[in-house]
Image (cartoon, rainbow, N blue to C red; front, side, top):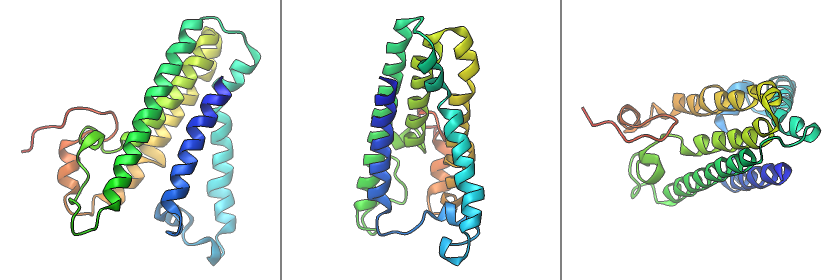
Length: 203
């Protein structure tokens, strides 16, 4: 079941990213991280800065699945609690991505300066928050449901994933670019960065 959950959520995200990036070239955040395009001789940088780091990250984030593969379920109700948190994450991430795609599809002269409706009214990055919920759900179902020892041994996985999404390669990195766009600083001042929350009143 855990393999199916990972396959569904990762497959949905891969499909979304492929459709979004098709014909648009490399994500500018990764170009900046590498110091230039791959074609300009930055393959070694990509291996060192991206693929090796991602390999370690995949091993780390998959710890709950590794624990579940070698232990029995101790608390079945936590498996279903984990599935519920995972499902919430997939729905939030999917709806957030869909709303952002609809916003980007509008002609530039017809779209607002920032997307601040729907889920984006309550979080500047609801898609990243949804992805974090996916991995907390997998930890609940695979780590905590297996007992206290597997839970403690694998707790680093959802914590690390949440850190990546919020501060390392996700929201915070994207914010550096977005803050230079018209209307975004005001939007950021009233809207939660990560966890959905009612917007603060305008000053």
